[in-house]
Length: 391
Image 1 (tube, one colour):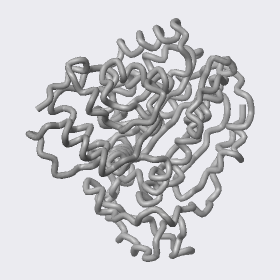
Image 2 (tube, helix red, strand yellow):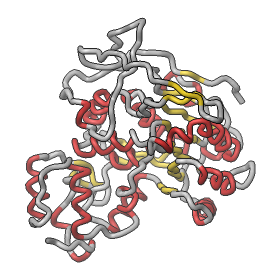
Image 3 (cartoon, rainbow, N blue to C red):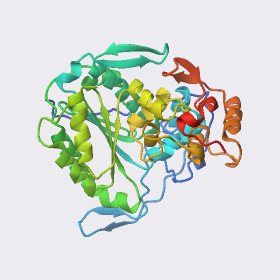
């Protein structure tokens, strides 16, 4: 096992000139301060001409534990919202969903992705979707996970988000913090998986890292995000008991299962039943799309929405789409998430409103359940079958 941490080297973050310039004021629930770089005041990592002045140094105090506490320090995840919005636009993420995603990421300033690189990830029961042809390709579990990791790195690069990729059997990758990760140059991502599944060890390392900052996160009503991708049981102890320790900290946990093996699914279901913390369990894209369709066929489960969930979401609205039928006025929340907050009259016919929105925002995305391109919200499927009450 490698012992050295792999730090991304500083690199210019490329932006897409054709994307519209946005105001940071859009994200009203956060105050954005770009870090000041004295050696390079016009740091290209922060797009657009006028570089903001450095924020005044926060006043520090020493708390009873001896930690340095910055009274005015604003915990912020997305330090480059314009760059992230540009990236998401190229991936056909609608405006409302971009706003929702960026604001949600800012609720969890630090993220840990636990990546399973054990030998069993070479099993060939995985699948990925070619987003150019919309065809499904059989592959190894490892290759399926790599598609998710590459998206997570892209988002971390574009938004300058503090992210750590914790592998079970090799050195971690540190992203964000004004660094650019080229996943083609990362040895962790370009060698075959091998080894056991020491999830307990990795989770304890994460707990040790969040402990010193936990109180500051609580004061600012922020969370740590932990996303666990795995295809097996922990090989070094009772993972449920370690996860229970997380109940004492401000954390959100997402589990991304990389297998359909009934034994493993049942194992993690039992773990979930023993926990008091919220655990959002995700399957592969097509399996999740089927679950969403069974509950809410009016919602197209695009790959963009699935990737957002794999990045980890604090807000719980999206968790519900594959768990319950969304009814009546509840649907307006999803209208706002996808199309953006607008002056919708909630007493109007929701089908008529959505039809108008679809005409004004004609972006259609691939629906794996109908094998065709459709609008994000499909009014014709809003009927008694999906439990919707039309106002």
